[in-house]
Image (tube, rainbow, N blue to C red):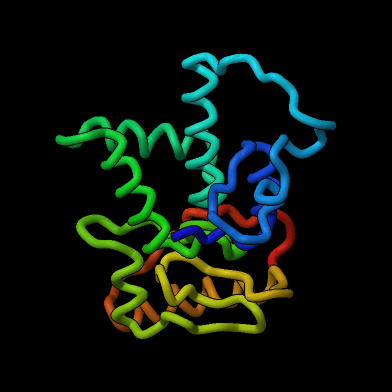
Length: 186
């Protein structure tokens, strides 16, 4: 399942295929590629070109994945036993299901304390969904703070401080931020 909301037609046009199977795809109405006047003979795509196109399809379908993230996921898939391509797609699907991809977020906010996970501590403290203004703790993964629209820096900082104080009070663990706050404090 994809989390991409915008630019699906643009990606379809760039790759020359209807990736999502949408009935309104511009590629369904033409025999030739968009921007071409009539059928144009295309040369055979090289092996590298086919691999690059397949990688671009995966990166487009599974959200905005950077090259570094994609490389790390690929190395993890190749390390696991079994078919690398099936493992890669499985890891991408798991990432899509467990992280708020497609939403504005500041990424993973807190570092994991030794022997535990920050997301588990935040979730057991009952802070999933907690919000200040338009900044909120993600309901999908508690270690992400998302922007629901027009969150200000002060809203995000207030959520961070509230989470730190609540987790310290409930679990006795002071969470350290992984993100760096630049500029003046709100």
